[in-house]
Amino acid sequence: MLELLIVLFLLSIIAAMAAPRLLQVYQSFGNRIDKDEIVIQIANIGTKVMKRGVGGKIAATIPKDVINNALNITAENRQPPPPLPYELPAGWKLKTAKDIIWLDSGVCLGGTLHAFNQQTRLTMVLKRPFCQPETIH
Image 1 (cartoon, rainbow, N blue to C red):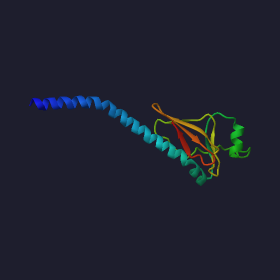
Image 2 (cartoon, rainbow, N blue to C red; image 1 turned 180 degrees about the horizontal axis):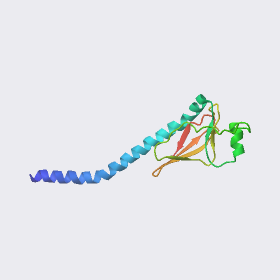
Image 3 (tube, helix red, strand yellow; image 1 turned 135 degrees about the vertical axis):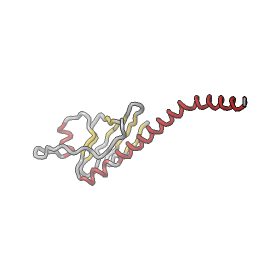
């Protein structure tokens, strides 16, 4: 009977040490899945834009005339393009210093994109013309 109590005591100590680490591993795994999903979503924007035939942008602050010229928005065609076809995992946001523009053909003009949530950050370099994300750690 004493041996059983000692074994249970040792198991409870081991479990108490492992439980906090298990939560951290779970959160880390969830963040890795979210990062992979973001990379996939960004990589597929060009194809989706080409299929719908209408370009778009991930916005930053930049003079509107530069954006309008790149997206071929004229005085008679003032409609801004619809949002780009991507979805971020819950709690994630995108930030860029310069607009990243996809033309109607699906060609991307390139840039650097930062995705972040409260716990982690992901930086991607999008090289023209296809903007397949290259992650920077």
